[in-house]
Length: 414
Ligand code: C5P
Image (cartoon, rainbow, N blue to C red; front, side, top):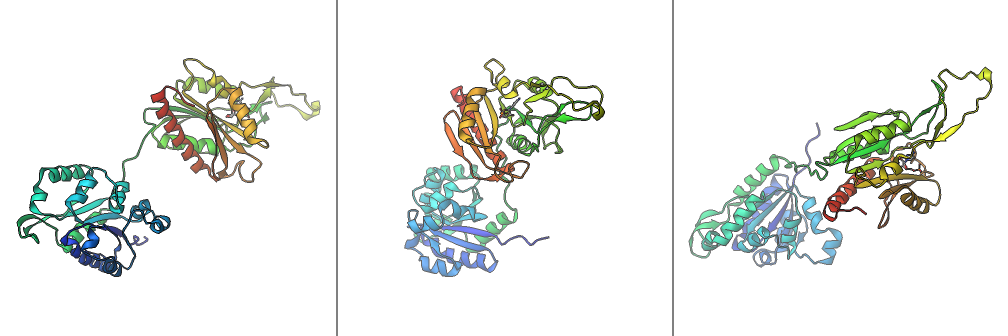
């Protein structure tokens, strides 16, 4: 097994006489092989210098939110992203109050507001400040938000008073931090914005039989549609995937209905209604042989004349206004030229809400793992960067979740 990568702590040093103890804390972390990056508040810098913290942490010290070079090189979001744990020591009454209220007026508070990492605070303040109902409220609120506390200790304070308020000793903060780090990243509860939503996805080609062994089909792999079904299910949707003949496993937590022809696909779609959204990613055959020979056509009989008739347009059918029309209908357009123009035309002609257009002349798109698409909505168009079909699917699923959420408020989807 791989050894786990070294842990990293982002240490926020607030204002207070106890700030000097942060130096010892940095030393303890470094000795244990834990990486430390320091954010020093303006008040903290009155008690301890960036130079000494920088020397001990063997890294630069971050001080100002609006330092342009800092923001260019490493933003406040990045600071927390690179850490496994945020430690605030000392956490002054003022810093606690700001954090409890979601204020973000300097680098330290902005990082605290932007983080999704565990936070450990070591409060340090005068005993009356610690016991003040406002601080009690703030600590309660932060605890409710999942922030952990170490200390404060009771004892003689720098201000000459006695009672709780002294910052915990560096060793105690270090031990508490190491125990948070040892429990590993706390798995964030999955965000399921599509919970309770029903979504229909079509995928793959259709196969229109000519005789018992031959038929009319296309080279659609079904990969994009399957990835969309999976991405929607991952966001909590109840997904029905109506699939033409492809060689792909059923994605987790998706109900798959296998069909062969376009007519069967339409029937299966109808049976799956009502749904909140429908994503028509299948490459449906436009035509089918008018008659299906019940025996294999013999070559000795000469080249057969096969009359083709139009297949139903599933996308256009589902887009028709009516009580069963999904709130959001998404179609696909595989184009070889004039991508946006043809796709916009399709949007209008078929009556769907969005079109995901892709240029199938690009190498690797048809049947490949990647896709480069343009999303056309009633409001405009967005060219998405080339990405794997799985990434395109996730992005589309998120857009669908956002549109349904917005649509529920506005009663409409654009
Ligand atoms: O007209 P065209 O085939 O280019 O349109 C593509 C879009 O229409 C895709 O979303 C496809 O799934 C859908 N479609 C359909 N039924 C058809 C033909 C296309 O649902 N018969």
